[in-house]
Length: 583
Image (cartoon, rainbow, N blue to C red):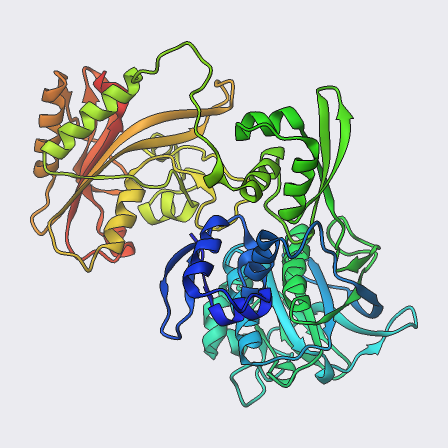
């Protein structure tokens, strides 16, 4: 879960509630779903919150939510914007990173706290929406240090987003004193070495020029000439990426944060060349895009989900207190509401998100629990009984029970385990865990992009994070795994899987086999382990798991390459098989 550092004094200043002490602020923040995790060394709150509310990645965003919570602000707020005087002209940009957006914010009164908040917001957006700058990267520049060229249309000033030869273009990057080429930045600059992989395969790298020359090398680093300081008053914000929607909404979040500091937002025209890659070729976009989205939700559904009776005036009131605008209307299902969503809210996708906001404004703690109006009696599902029995057996065999996320990313699920996507050959395609993954279309984080196809990678990640703890570590998990399957109505085949690993100095195939045999005996299953091959395990020390004549999994000693990949310095023996084989 994302954690953001927030100065409580800044919160009091930005909300206008100096009377609130720290405990009151913590309680109010908890009502919004922001949990206090502790203090930083600088006496700031460490707040953890749901990763969907990216507008709260800064103290300004948190303060905005509190002002709505206190009733000081109501409804959708759209910052006033001045007309565009600057144009970002887009030509010959890299096909791999075709999109750009921008904005200008003038009249800021920057201090150390405001600058620190802006830097933190930039870093948090990079890590979440930007997927570590791969999908979107933010550049913030001191506008007074830019010299705009004449715009192509003859009106205003312009900068150019284009591409450059990595060994010819030069500029002085941040934290450097001499001119460097983009290639030299990637090779020898600390930031360049961190993010250079993002442009490693580009023949020509992304570059942004003004009339003086190169001043930004996205998504890697900005130039020192336009560095922002506490003396900066006017800022130029540019963002490049692989998806226009993503960078436009990242830009909205930054603009709202700076507007909360008293900045005046000014539009920027983004002019794409006629032959530009992507769907915006030949078009000019006016940014930032502060247009609102509209969702429809029925009154009956609000009352059904929240379990309370509300009149329409109350619904409109709670919506406005959540930072939304609601208008009562009629639908085929009775009374409904057209709800306007502000530009900085990237999390509102479904009417249920609207109901959640209304519920928070109402106060979930104030809801009275009621028994559901049903005549059936709940009972434990047979699958749940099997899971509990298998889990008890594993714990009895000395394993610690784990509960990991079902979502993972392709690198953890496949590459770091020695598997490939797609499978390298027919033999690999049949390996346990080697399935076409269910991919998330718009993931909030690059750490969680697919549903895992097997559970052993999750256990290896736990072992990797537990190298500071004592050994032996015997870990097991029973959980969900999934893969694409055209024969299923949903297109996805889900199954419950049993995975276990022994991490100890003397871990061996025989140890894992003994535990697996005891587990099979507990369920009166006949176990066979014929030799097989699997990229995650050592050849000759790996076998197929066959229960009652059905091949259901794999067992063996983890391959040294996989151990090194997970920074493990002692052997690991493991097995994984389908839970349904124990029925």
